[in-house]
Image (cartoon, rainbow, N blue to C red):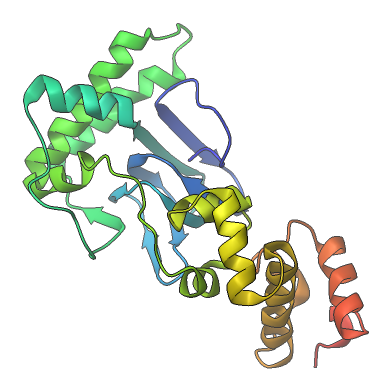
Length: 270
């Protein structure tokens, strides 16, 4: 999955890692249909963790904050292939084939494990030439593959139409509860604003009304409090904690931690 803010040139993506990879926080703006070729992908959504092993199929719903850990098998390589189902393509598909939602999808899994079978395996195999060949594949062929993916998903689970063809944007939700659940995701404030159903200006105003401080100050303090708990009470190493709680690098985390608590996080261990 491309990091938040990264523009994809193709809706088809291939991941290959020879060593354990812990990617930064990501915002998933589009639905993603994926197949695990080898290794294990672990996805954390803030309140639940999912693990997908070799041969697993999954559908990741759009408008989510996610964390990924990509683990190769022993002496092997992590490989996965994904196809993104963007909103313009799905709108065109909906008009062309007469699909629309019957009811809004509420609850349930935002990261769904799918029983694919030979149909899905053959489809995913057919995507490999699009990313491994020497010749660029034109846009029309790529769109045909996206349409094929949608048709396969609808055959597997017809009720997925209530997810795929729901083009509504996030509604206004409880900001305090959302931030306390998702503070450890290191994404731009505009993402938090969007996912809580607010403009950036309204988000900042509502945030300061609730928390009596700015979002940036609150986020750093809340992340450092969580880090203190994990290191002191759970015996975690600072080098294992800083990414988990939303810092980009260890040196910045250590500096901020010392400024808040008067000692570096390494001195808190034990």
